[in-house]
Length: 192
Image (cartoon, rainbow, N blue to C red; front, side, top):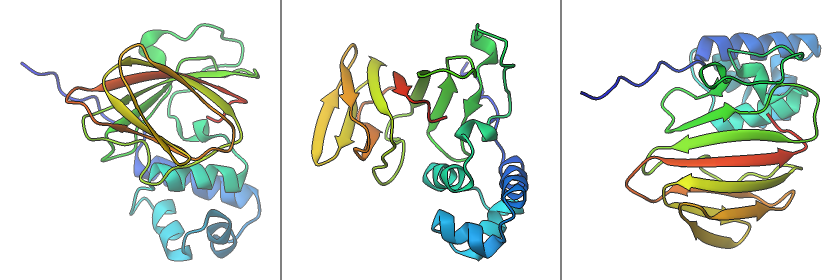
């Protein structure tokens, strides 16, 4: 008997409340914040009210525009004094309707590197359009078959393959296999 999929730890209402709170802390109007994010004021208002859920792309742009880490949207946080991350207590990010789950493997402390795990269901993709960030990234495919779109290149990766992604190179992952794919990646400086 198949196990039920765990409920997403991130819900639209919680994301919306966090966005509204951070926007207000910055003293930004909905119109000003929407312009920084690159979405319409109406879309931002719907996100803040929990009417619609942002895509991962919009969520990352929102975090960048508001100057907050993406982990602001994680529902479980670890205290800065902790150096062990227990398997059952990892902060997770899964947007409703997404085939992708991000787990923070490194403790949320001030460090120069961050370790994460991402699982992608068959046919799933991390983002619809390649995105870049200022950090260096190295990834190891633990299982599955993936296509990595990196800049103008396309690379197929499978169990045990690893790849380095330079800073500012747009990239996205697509699971082209028939089973759930699992990747562990390190990024420096941390982006979540």
